[in-house]
Length: 538
Image (cartoon, rainbow, N blue to C red; front, top):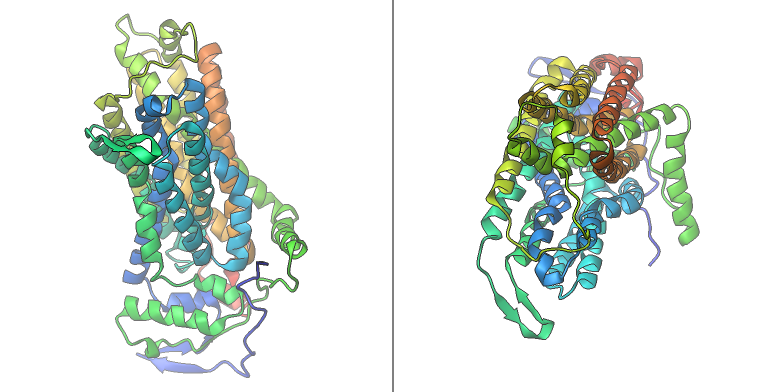
């Protein structure tokens, strides 16, 4: 069936005049920009509940993305996996996101944020359940890849959906707190794995020729947050910014009235804004049907991102996300091995790479896998500790972002963590190296903050596409980083720390080009009252 845009090309009629009313001694304009209308809804319970919903979806995304790291060691006997097969199966979620983020971004900008997430989460959860019953590697890989393809839908859209429900005064903070669920996911996944994998489950399913064991249950458990998020999202509305960009004023005002009623604990009819000023730019509906119209729509959504004035911001956010994902996820894969080598070192104090070089061994045949599907509990404990540190950093950023500003936080964190990457290699003892290496990994706390920057820099009709492209580049960084670091650790250990430490410092330097803290909404409205200012680059 040909795909049609959910945005109908309709705009509200211009008001003959701007009426005002007096309420509690204050003057409110009955016609306002969307930013001012959202400020009138206040900030409170509605925004917090929406942040928790978006956070739950984010937690589901990170759990499904990283679950293979715990599933494959436990499944290697049942699926007869080699080391190479385990390697590319672990990369499946990242590859799916890279290949499909563009499409999901286009769909979100033309069909709606909520629609894309509901559709994609449904299919992703269904195929994850089917994958848990796979009898061999081909079916498991195919079903897991399809599940990951649809999992990339909420991955690409949820940050935009979260940011567009919060007014400009609190947007940075709420996105930062929502991002903390990424850290919570890195704690929840090893905790759930620790709970499920040791279970002695052995249920024969004869017609599939499999025995249902604990790792198969973990495949389903890792998708539970997405399934729960789907149910809760059924009761949530579409983004008011998307509705307004589509020209659906009444639908947008209904969402704003509901936000006002919950936050202010007042009747929705007392909401002072009665109409919204027209968007200067609206999401364009597809006038024709068929593949030509789809490709033309995708081109229209993408081309402006690679032309002035948006080109520099597209390059900036894509480069930063590439560096953050490449460093954080790249080293995260090797962190347990590195730490284990340092802890087991019994000789005199030495530098990190000297210890790794001394303890590095190469197996006679890299394709041979000893069929031992038990996982040491220390692996779960270590992963939980790392996740707790990540989560704490996200929460700290959430508390200070409104005070300090995104630009200052990004420059500070990226500079410090990048220099710690250099220091981890140069540290004279392994104890100091461990501390510096752990701090180096904290650059990942800037991923959510960079998404908050992206939401602010790009117009509404290109915003989801911009987030998707930057996240896609981030996943490219993840695959590039993990492979490069693996090569460098066995050939030139120090180069991996210099390269990625330098990459993070370069990201910090690029952040100097970001705009400073934005002016107050009142000032913005005075400067151009007929424009939704969040649709302009900050």
